[in-house]
Length: 127
Length: 94
Length: 141
Image 1: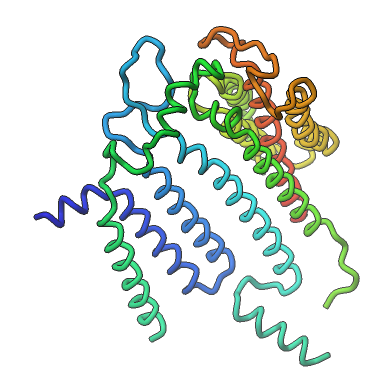
Image 2: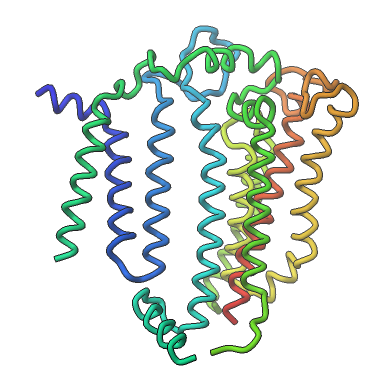
């Protein structure tokens, strides 16, 4: 069918969209704080996959220039060079979020989102 | 109940995303809009202008070296943020 | 943790991992890799050492002063290489314009300022990973 060949031609992009929706479901449903951070990481990974797949050329080689062949087709190097910065920003945000979770655990002794909200409202209504 | 509603809304989002993905040019075609004069310039002139065989290393350290400086600053800022959160002494506790 | 098998295997494997990481950082302009992946491999080898031998031993190998020096030295080295071009010609981070010797493509000592910048990035990423891990683990005890 024409729809099936069309889906197989865009399989990387559809995989990236599926990963994004899975990550969003993980953030919205679970109440544990660590699982939400993992969901945000899954969403970021899907965006990296989507962006790097734009530069793929079929029957192209990786962009290390070989001096002995003058007519060779290379893969587009520009999206890969742009995503390198994005990966570093994602790692930094995850590190900062995890350090905030450590401080929250020390203050409230639980990692559940709803229990933390109850305890903080209890404390603020007692003052 | 609310879980079912979440699944319905996310399935609708997935259908909208796939509907607009199927209009993109197919994976791996060489007449992508992103394979333009910038890419052919980088692939042709990288060896004679910078002398390195790795085109991506030539892009991030020679043609666009300023963006790599910004990224190094982001790494440094993340270290400063983590240390300032974890090594502060709280004054009194609950 | 105090397992004998993990300690012995770690003691055997960590030099090879670091040699591989240094190889990827040094050949950044000839083969795939570069500063970021090589720095991540070097950081991962020290994290393996910390996990199997404990925090006290790892703090003797990489104390806080050395990782602080490497981190700030990496940024200053990166900016210094840029300032060489700025002072002589007027262009920040110029390679051929500012007088760096390009050499013959394909050899190890070629491509002007690209190996210098790759070394700075590799050192910085490795020391970032080690410092983050030691800070988070120290909070636990």
